[in-house]
Each structure stands twice: as structure tokens, then as C-alpha cells.
Image (cartoon, rainbow, N blue to C red; front, side, top):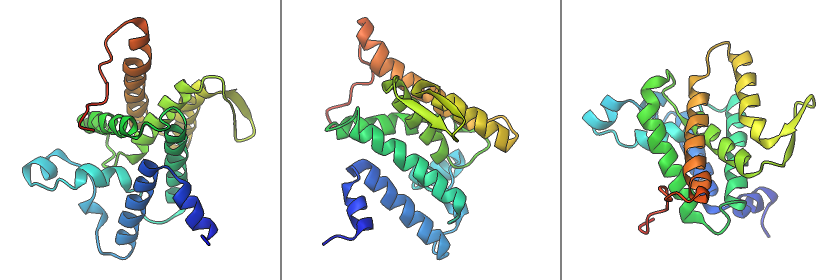
Length: 204
């Protein structure tokens, strides 16, 4: 008989479950000091000139040391990844993997625009944006104060983040921009008679 936590873990769709596993393993390794955080972030020079290619993945799955902030980011990422994988990507695992790949590559190309060396939170905004546009009639309640429909969620979160952080949230805007590009090329443009540029390659 499975324990509640084990049952919850096994019920999570495969791609989201892989993300949870990898992120938790990386976080645990840093807590045990088997790995240092500065071996995980992304920079062009360290990856492509020194061959530290693991940074292409670790910068998306590391959300800092175990803390309330870490749990918040993990909850946020898992929630929207799972809703996408169980919703519009249900029984379309390859399409979901391709969306994540496209999003990750796009964010890496735009990485010089942001001062953050880790892009996991930015990737989460991509997922939030795509989910919100595909669930336009879902009504949400933010902090028990604001009630709005799903398409406004990325902008509400952006404003809330700006108020808390005090700076211009370039990373969050990058996530929204990439999410919009994916949504437009995958959902809008083909429905207007255009070519489906982001069709999942057969190799995936």
C-alpha cells in the first residue's frame, strides 16, 4: 500500500514527475554540499567554451537552497506544469516535451537580457502564460482580493512580483514573451490558415 506522498508522486504525469525528481536531487546535492550552486548556473562562456554542458539543464531546475522561497517556486512550477500536462497536453507527452525544449532554448538565447543566472522561474512564466491562454474562462482568486479570468494571471503575477522585488522584472517578461510566441505559432496562426511552424518533430 502506497503512502500518501508516494501516491501523490506516482499520480503526477511523467514529464512533471521527472522535473520534480531532478530538481529535488539537485537541491539535495547542494544542501549536502556535494555540489556548489555556482556550478549550476548558466553562462555562455562556461557552457560553450569550457564544455560544462550540464548547466543548460541545471539552471532550469535549481531554485536555491531549501527554504520557503524554494517551496513556493516548486509549488508554482509543479502546479502549472501538471495542469498543462493533464489538460491541453493530455496523452501528448512528446508535444509537451517539445514545448519545453522550444521554451528552454529560446530563454537561453535571451539570457543575456536578464541578470538572473537561473531561468527556472522564467520558464514557469512560460507555462503560466500558455495555460492561461488555453483556459480563458477559468476564474481565479488572487490572495482573496482580486477575482479575474485566467488570461490576466501572468500580468497579475508580474505586477505582484514587481511590487515585492522593487525592480523591473525582465525575466518574467521574457517568460511571458516566449509563452506568447509559442501560443501564437501553435494555437493562433495555424487556426488562421498558416503553417504550423512548431509541429513536434517525429524524432521526439
